[in-house]
Image 1: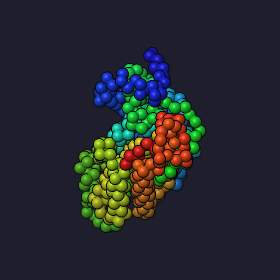
Image 2: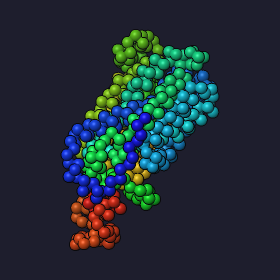
Image 3: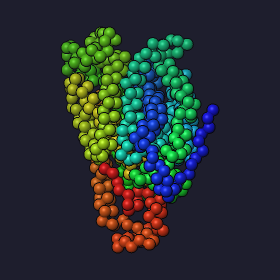
Length: 530
């Protein structure tokens, strides 16, 4: 088989000298070439990642808890333990990805989580469920932050939004497809003396295992080693990234100072609040959407004590067709009905996620988009809290997915584009994503019973409010810092350059290039994007 292309080390100075040669490259054609080789496979991988993470919610609807003899509290604990290794390992995982290469590291974690997923199908008790959930959280930790960091290493800041949105939209596809797939696989109930819920885990896990070795040959590492590009094209990609203030695009050696820079940067800590604001709602939504939809009609039935056909049941019948016949004779939806009613919700989320990603790149206003989407999320959960109408509540579910899913790639692109330095960016993204994901452990426990659903919605409302406030802080501080740099308050002392604004407290360097490499986004010439 063809071997990986050896790494071509290109320093920023070398790239500048080669600019004349690289200028013959058709940039738009090259970008399409990169898109086709990078984005589709990452989208597939995240589709599998999100399906494997959330399919326990579908399995529960097919008697998982009864068959392994666990109660509701034990089930929620099993959901919770996933998030601790998942969140804690994410910052470390990104460092491994940079040092081992994406093709190696991602293939390893895909294979391992596929095994963990398959093992879900042979468990018999509570201890087994907790064990496989911990292993799944540990092995899946490297995927999401790794892909985000990987994409940020290929594209300019004005190009990241739509790419991250396309790959992340697979999470909404996973939400829709997992419901359909679970409904189909559940018909295997009894084959091999295994229940339907076990086959959901086994089949989806085996697919992931098969994809792992294929990924090693398909995933291209970083631009300076990409074998599908010519040397001239690799030079051009790196140069255009450096011109976009990604000065470390040609590669940098790991130093602990980069980790320190990340930990002491206010942007890391505010980004943690933004990620908390959408990750908590994300996991509550993805784990409980079928159940929430089911409870919409159930709660309204009890609140109205009405024998009339509920609007949501009518909607469910029109969507589900013959599968939903007889729904009006039950309280709430059956497992199949709840799963199928969640499908159009996720399809809408997928479409809107891609639209918002495109607008963020084209308009360059991620700050205002974030505020708008968090605002929509606040409205959605206020409706879910106060509504006693099934149709209105179902509409609020659409509003919720309109906010929760599009805001994630928009926020990720916004944060990533304002962190310079390959290792600093990898650590910052890992910390922020890890902190956000740990709140999945909280939101996995907020819907304990039907009587507590309004309390659960209230907790999600608080998370969204935190995200709104942190986005506001992030945007205001970026604007203020750009203004300070425009006034020369952050100017460094550069040998041979006379600058009346230069101050020794900002550092002294041999050249502008040395200041860029050492300070990254703290360099006085770097401008943050809004």
